[in-house]
Image (tube, rainbow, N blue to C red; front, top):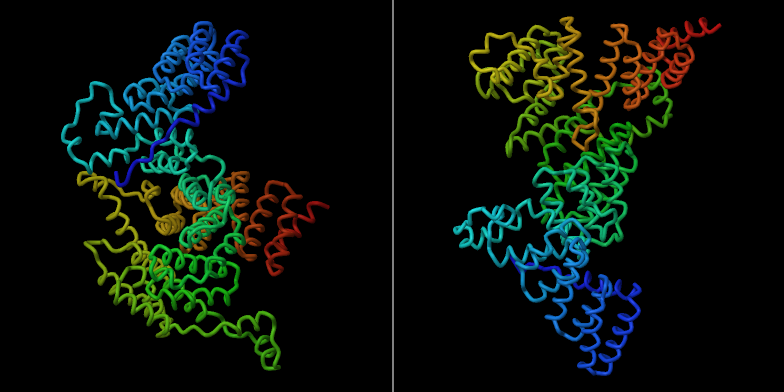
Amino acid sequence: MKGPLVLIFASVVLSCSCIACQGHVEGGSVTALLDSADAYIANGDVKSAFASLKTAQSQASNTYERMGVYKRYLKLGDLSLAEKTVKKALRKDHDSKELAAIYGSLLLSQNRIKEALKVSRGLSGSQYGSVYAEAFMRNAINTGKSANELFGSRRTKADREWAKDETRRSEVFYDTRFAPVYHDAYVGSGRYRWNWNAAALSMHAGKYDDAAAMYPSKTESLEDALFWGTILYDAGRYPQSLEALLTRSSDTAPEDVLIKYKSLLADDYYILAQDAESERERSEILGMNLSEYAASNPSVAQILSQTYVNSALYYKSNDDHLSEYQRLNALVTRYPDYKPGLAAYGQFALDRSRVPKDDTMTAHIRAAGLQTRQMEIEAQIPPVSVDDALALVKHAIEKNSSPDLLVLEEELILQSNGYTEASQRVSRLWPLLERNQISDNRYPPEIVRYAVVSLIQNGYLDEACELFDTYEKEVYQQDYGKKSRKKKFSSAEHADEMELWECEVAAWFAIQNGDVESALVFYKTIIEKFAPRSPVMNVSGQNDSVVNSYVNAGNIYSGTNQGAVALDYLNKASSRATTAELKAEILYRIGKQNFYLNDLHSASKALQYALRLDPSHNKARFVLQQVNREQK
């Protein structure tokens, strides 16, 4: 290993044991003899002290009395008599882990590693496990054995080549089987980095629950909080991850640790649906003066660029387009080659270009020299040219092309050139597919997604269906083998393997073809795979897909007279809706379903709420009138 291995000494265990000895009532005569020995030792009368201890040892009748003798032999420096005393005590009480720990520590102090390992083997997993851990690791260093030899049976054949290779000998300590050994070392020593080693090895072995179970319930520093927050996050224990991060004992840490800490804190808050708190942490990160530091630290630059995008998405979901612009403008200025940032900036340019012009009333207000609050906010947003965004994307493609950038480039070109006719837009799809063909009927998924959705939006449904089916068969039917190609292909059989967009498109086609059963399979797959929150890019779009799947699944169950199940799906959709209009539409459906189930009170409540959110929802108003008539 690089650098000396820090070993754990068991003096803490020993001293604790000795203190414990003093706290118990030793037999009357033995106590007197031990007191006499203490007095002799204090006066330098070693001969008399040994005589008293010899008599006390012969009269000792329990572990605590024998340990009193043992402690004083140690004080006198007679390790031989001390060992005889503890061995005799251990024979009398062979199940005592405390005695085994004391004897193991004594053997380690004399460098009798193999004997210490044998004595302390039963201590693993106990409060005295550090004695075993030290013995095991010192034995590994001294013998140079492979992990299989160390952890295997005695019959395991020695690997002589391993013993000759210094590099391989040092790598033995990275074997995942060392995880419990390191944890034992931590329990006895209190040195948190031993616990880090144990958890890291468990994570490497895919034992996430084992690693999470090592969390000590408190953290030593902000760096320690970050480590355990990450372990628990990767184990999917987000509330515990947040707890670990918030139990830090100090805010002092190097800048890179502080940034990673706040970034993980923001992710935890987001996953737990605490969006405002998540953005607060992101804002603190972006408020730090980190430009120079990030320039020499790629991992920090990556975190900052991701934070800008996630922050912009937060403001977009809250219709705060001024703040969204400010985040994106700063992003493309500082990190012009960051692809998700370019995509978000390009999408913002497209969104702004599609903002509807003033209606008659707004035009009159503006002509009168007046402004509404919304008009004032809109006026503060600088114009973002589609052509400028297109230039940035083209520059990025020249440096490092990717399918997602090519799709964004195509969308910007259509908007920049004013291609509004369906035939114009569709005519560009086929050359785009041809230029990016990987093999027969195989294209990058980003390109296929864009082409299929564009064909649907422009009314070319047959072409969209053919392209999608051909792509799906090429991607998934290869698993069947050549003999199975005659078998009728069903994309529903591969729902678990499909991406989000594939499930959405497949569900749409299934509904068009009247295949309700397959559509339900896809909607359920979307819900199961993508409903859990995760701090990924474009997560707002993912959430919309999940909400739509809940609603559509609810509609299917409603149509098959499973009203209670339909309500469950619709209620879950309502809890995730991010806009007033969408929530009002879902509440309208909830109210209508309750009306069908004759739950007039719940129906009235949902419909009234829908109308408060969207007073123009006439369908909700109509059903509410029906409910009111029934209640009379």
